[in-house]
Length: 378
Image (cartoon, rainbow, N blue to C red):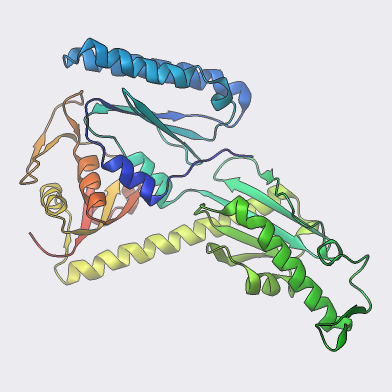
């Protein structure tokens, strides 16, 4: 299966609050194939070399540089870590700490050295993670699958998952009648009895899935036929079960076909979310509560006025944002002193509780590097 650590909002907020020099942010393209792990390790080592050179050019203390090297060398040397990757790796390091996230999105490689972390690509994985689970549910079988945008479908091992309805209710078959002192005066039978047992089956599946899905924010797509699909929905406790469903008996559908159907549902889900977000920005603009100029958005973020922020994941704008006024000073190149202006706007908006959406250029309201819906004009 894929090995992913998609950050929560608390994770992102914690990273956004870090202010110390140096903060090194590294994004690598990886694969879940163990035979490709050495390539990713070499790439991280090369990125570390770049970071060290930037710090030397900026006059950083030798001891600080050596501590940073030691911190990342420990990660590079951790063979167990490199055997379990996804499609991108985000690394956030200081001389005394390192955080990593294995992401299902395919992100471009990048390195930033500054006194704060570079978070914009990470927010893309939070906005649209491009991964989901499929619960392939039938009376005689159940399996949990994990999908991402371009990867093969992976079967997820779920401890305690019942094999079928009869297994869940402890019977050799769900046909016929059985004694139960709590149901229908001691007897359940026929179609109604089967539905009772299917509901018990669905509850057992839901219980088994809880520890596997706990803390995750990925969509769960149901592949099932009625009446089992409706019965499972009635007992499901996972908050991200999608309305979209893969209809029919999944026992007759190969995993890869289920994956393709799930990706279509996922695309439709994200397209609908994006349309709603863009429409919301248009309504705010109509009431004078939207800004798209880089300097205006930077000032709004500095004063805590940003309520919703769109950032273009593909645009990089080197420079500085004044701590007090939010005034933007652009730079010709990125180094260990300057940082990404868009990312700093994002960081300040995060710290004031704004919603953040990292999108591609074609999906940006106004077509610029940033766009914001504001609580008040500044």
